[in-house]
Length: 317
Length: 234
Ligand SMILES: Nc1ncnc2c1ncn2[C@@H]1O[C@H](COP(=O)(O)OP(=O)(O)OP(=O)(O)O)[C@@H](O)[C@H]1O
Ligand SMILES: [Mg+2]
Image (cartoon, rainbow over all chains, first blue to last red; front, side, top):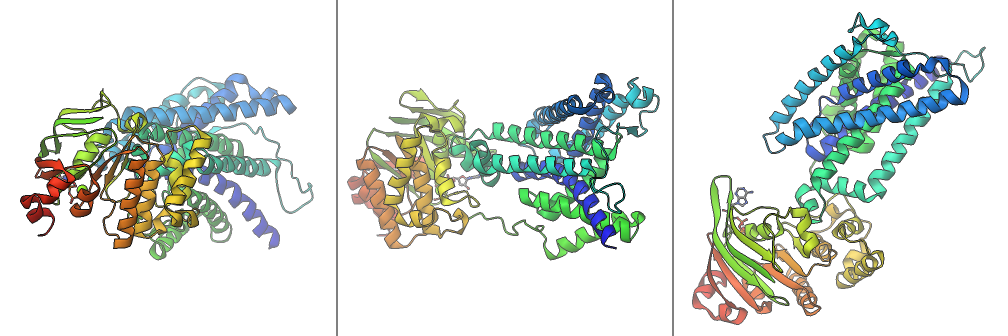
């Protein structure tokens, strides 16, 4: 029993990290624009395709040891950069021209962009690459090679599995979240972001170029999604064109549970969701997963309508 | 120093300023008084760039302001403490002041100015680490004025700094305005509290439904029977 619980804890935490990283992108954009970027999950998906393409083109599978580590770091950074640029471009091309329109216009456009990106994913998956299985079945899940060592750190005989990749996923995610925390609380850009989120007009009076702050927010959110995508792909070893839809929905839920717009809330919500999912799969059954997750979401929102860390009243004095 | 020349401004299709003209000279305190909805706030936002006039010109030290984006106008030396205080509620008092100095890079000067503002408003020093949203209304107003001062403006726009404050705090705010002015900051002050504003102002303008209907020195306006009847409650 102890081992089962501990095992689900590990699984829940690793999955939760990915949800949290994606949830951060939803929540940061919401915090500034009060707008849900429904295409965010699909930026995550495209970044995974990008990473898999790099893996295939470089033929990463043939490398080992330090060289592999360096290549993986490079792929993580490149994919984060890719996610950042895609997210920024979406904002520039689609959302920004609609900034002064009624709120529904960018929202509906975001849903449109989401479908558009999924179709790009389909086209991308049709490329004749070996890693895409030759491209004959664009919609089929593509296997992402097992690049991280999956040895059990607790020894082959242990009933509990803690893989090196678990530790890497959790460690790297924590490092990125710490960096984000420092960015938001300590740097001038971070303070400009928080000021813009709280009162954009007053922020402009301080000399803050709020358009630039919004752009920076999309850049950071996209980078987090790109990072999360590689982590996810290395961990789950499958990518497919709808992976952004499902994970995006869960991550969005995590952001809402934590209190949309609240950065620590997104991390809390993501971890909570990951853990609940792992335990419900183990003890209730995987077929009940959505019902359990969204049931809990509803219960939390009934008692805390603004989410776990969200503030109920907007402090406008 | 500041010349507002015949500006018209609208929200959507509704024009609310119908050709406002006014001047502020270096070193002055100029006040803008008028009933609710007269267009005082809109006039200030047209100067600081939050709102852009439909027509007319605004020039500051000879430079045309209308084409300059709002976030660059503060870099030219105009700081605006907006109507309703608008401090950042979930940032601390110290962080609010820090954002006031967003455009500056002189670390030492900024550190000195924190102390200067804490000396003017000692209560803010005690509350440095408190979230601005949890300050009392009066404290928030002091913070809003202090935050605008952190930009080291040559022209300070103040929109109803005394609104909703206890008489003692109003007095304190007016003392600070006089003190700042004595130290060289030019002030354009919008006030409901017309009597106090006209007392400390060198000159004033009276706004009514988007037009300037009277102007003169503070003393002249205080003595004007029409102004007395409409705005001084006599
Ligand atoms: N954002 C807005 N949208 C639409 N109309 C506005 C807006 N802001 C102001 N107005 C209108 O413009 C007119 C002038 O408003 P303004 O706020 O400039 O007046 P004011 O003199 O500052 O009034 P008060 O003393 O009440 O602050 C008013 O009729 C007001 O209803
Ligand atoms: Mg007003």
